[in-house]
Length: 102
Image (cartoon, rainbow, N blue to C red):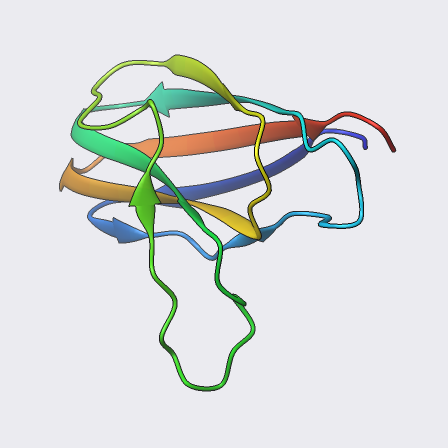
């Protein structure tokens, strides 16, 4: 998979980045790049259907939780989506994800 990027600015969550669940094994590498002042952000994942019309998507923290600087991580188990959640700060976070096997 070519790298995909999402970003968000200020307090709140980004739109979800949908992950290809047809790839086995799931191997995702990601980097979150901070611009400006972000005091606390978390990269979150879900195993629910992010396109669900019920709006009941559960989000969980990755290894990047409560961060304030650029960081990277990986996921080696099946997930359906990733997103950025900025808790405090007026800066922005850009999340770039590469999935192996495509």
